[in-house]
Amino acid sequence: MTLLTTPFGFATTAEEVAAEIDLSGRRAVVTGASSGLGAETARVLAARGAEVVLAVRDPAAGERTAAGITASTGSEALRVAPLDLTDPASVSAFAAAWNGPLDILVNNAGIMACAEQYTPQGWELQFATNHLGHFALANALHSALAAAGGARVVVLSSTGHQRSPVVFDDPHFAFRSYDPWAAYAQSKTANVLFAVAAARRWARDGITANALMPGAVRTNLQRHVGGSSGRVSPDQIKTLEQGAATTVLLAASPLVEGVSGRYFEDCNEAETVDRRTGTLHGVARYAVDPDNAERLWTLSERLLADGAGTARR
Image (cartoon, rainbow, N blue to C red; front, side, top):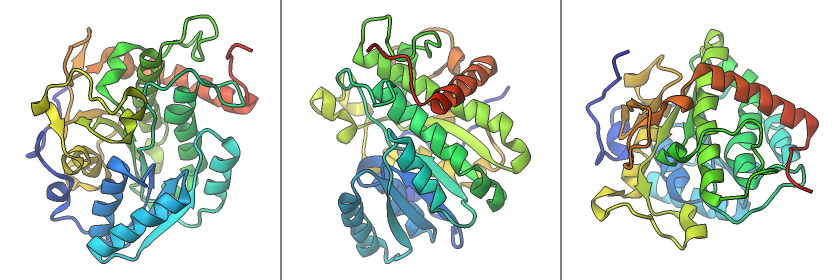
């Protein structure tokens, strides 16, 4: 299959991607939008005319961000809503409060390489936050997405997914020693697999789903590793404006109309690889494997239904 390319690249900003796009009448939800890439994504979508809901754990921080977006764009079509992705009740409440169609869902929130922690349900925290919470949210909002006609689901992943596939027999480290980077990698692989499965399952509803690597960007995501960008060279670090570009491309650009189930980086579709690249490029074959995607979907449904994972007691 020929990889999809666009005129944009590494240094493109989100505003440049959205420059000719009119999102008037479109409704968007951006998780984790109180800071970082989520805030920049929300700002650009709002600037192009979209009604944007900032779904955040800290509503006060969200309100400050919304006020800043209004000040910089003039848009008042912003709303802040509480959402704790680790709490199924919070996810259900957010979805229950939603009325009408939803055109754009950006699964942006996440945590990276945190110390070993588990939710009350027994789920490993990174898997719960980065994947399970977003999986539950998207499914709870499915009818709203279907009602929009041509809705888009955008899922932020990471090249870090190349460190680990989803370990289906032990997703919550009940039997293997916890490693913060392995846990992060597994959750980021899960993000891609969700997009692959959703693309197939929801195609009849006109919903597209794609995953992406935003690039190396200094945000609060690095708070558990001292704010470091690791071994990334300075010339590979993106600004927030550049980091949000691929998200905005997938959320709003006509260049990817109807495209679904793929993984993008630097505003272009990534190459599938069979070993770790040691760079910020490429998507592991196991992360776009349709059988793995279906297996994860089934596992995720079971975990949410049971309300408990397999974490050590």
